[in-house]
Length: 226
Image 1: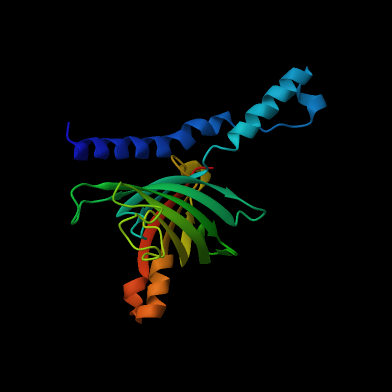
Image 2: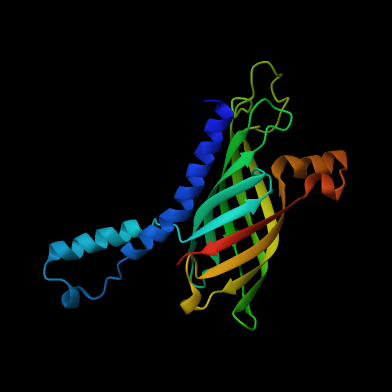
C-alpha cells in the first residue's frame, strides 16, 4: 500500500471520528440536580458527578475550513463556552497536497476564537460581525524543524519552520435550525477569515511586501451539535 493512499485513508478516518463522536456522545450528558432529590447514595452522586466532568470534554461543534495556512482543507472539532458563548477552542487536522514536494503532508492546528457580540436577524439568522483570535499550526514532516539545524549559522533563521503562530479577523453568519428540522446540528455557521502568521508579519515590515503577500483569505463552515 502506497504512503499516499495510507495518509488519505487516515485523513478519512479522522474526519469520520471528529464528526460522529459528538453526535453519539451527546445523549450521555447528564444534568445533575440537587443531591437530595435525585440520588439514593453518596456513591451514585459521586459517580454521576464524575461522568459529568468527563462529558465536558465532548466536542460541541465540528468545523471545516478551506485555506488559512493550516492546509488546503482542514477538519476538526471544538468547544463553545463563556457566559454568552463568546469563546471557542478548536482542534483541526489539515491536508496539504504534494505541490512541489514528494508526498502529501498532514497538519494540526490549535485555534482560539473570540466572538464579542451577536446581532439577531429575521427568520432564524444571526450575524456575528466580528470574529478574531489566534492559532498555532504545525506540520507532521521531517522537512520542518523546531530548533535550527547545525548546518545553518547560529541565528540565520529567527523562526521555527515547524510551528507557525497566526492571528486573524473575520465575520460569520449563523442559520439557527428550527428544532423540528434538526437532524445533525442545531445551527450552521458560515465564516471567512483574513489571517497572517508571525513570519509573514515580520517580512512585511522588513521587505516592504504587498498586502496579498502576507495576508491569507480562508472560508469555513461550523456545525453546532449541542
